[in-house]
Image (cartoon, rainbow, N blue to C red; front, side):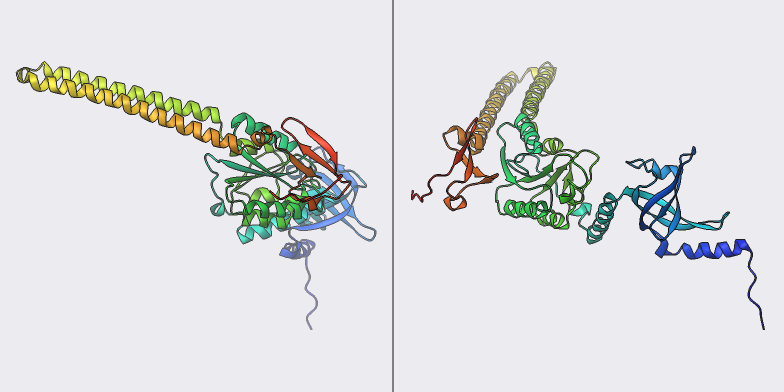
Length: 402
């Protein structure tokens, strides 16, 4: 009868190590309380993670812990993501940590990564499905909170770059549990507008929890299904959300999103004027070259005799020159007329122009009132005028036929 196989300690440790290298022990997330924390002079972090019944040793090497946005300490409850392995000199198994987050934030990060992987596998992040932004949009929609700093920054940038751009602000809740359905509803409304060229989805900076509405699967799918190109400008430059990965273009801030979408009107004017001046110079140079060539030919002995033909050619050159200048003036006048026409249309469509004609916009809690049935007697409403607004109380409600 054969006895048990005799192993060396190294062989036994190697067998255990091989078992712990199975996929089940890779990329696991563990929640526990930090104890025996040591931040070694090498930069590596050594500690234990424990709960009320068990404890496991853990290490987070310097190259990994340099990316932490908090300082771990004894007593902290954290979520650690990494792989299980064996430290062979001591024959001890321990957790090799790649990422670590405070309790709560870690759980959100895990949800973020799971949804990110799911949508990536479905192809929602593929570069091939992203649409180019229009070079010169005529109608821009902005989905954001109508009272936040983001909309003020966006309108300021658009007003500076293209003063007569037609902007449609679609109000949405951009924080909390009501955020995702509100954003989805805003995209559904935008999809019904036939004249929109591009949409900006924006929100100012905030914590991970405050930006979580933009990591919602419903919002991601609403962006993917939108028939209009979408630019996201959510948070600060270091903030990345699921919405950024799905959108056609990601801007680091709301202001940067406005700059991406809207061209500089005055730069366009300078560019057109530059092309016009270059065209004039090129034509003048061409004419000068032709005149030089003609002068050279007329001085050749073989062509001195047919003087009449040369005179006709001189006259033809002068006619072509006059015709060219007339064409230039014609196209210049036509361009100016088209520019005035487009400027007039943009001015007519501008919400500010409408307000300046004596119209006003009545809203309740940020929602535009288009029907008397949307308010009750005694409700507080806001009336937006051209340069001011009024806070009013509804005293009477009646239907008017026009």
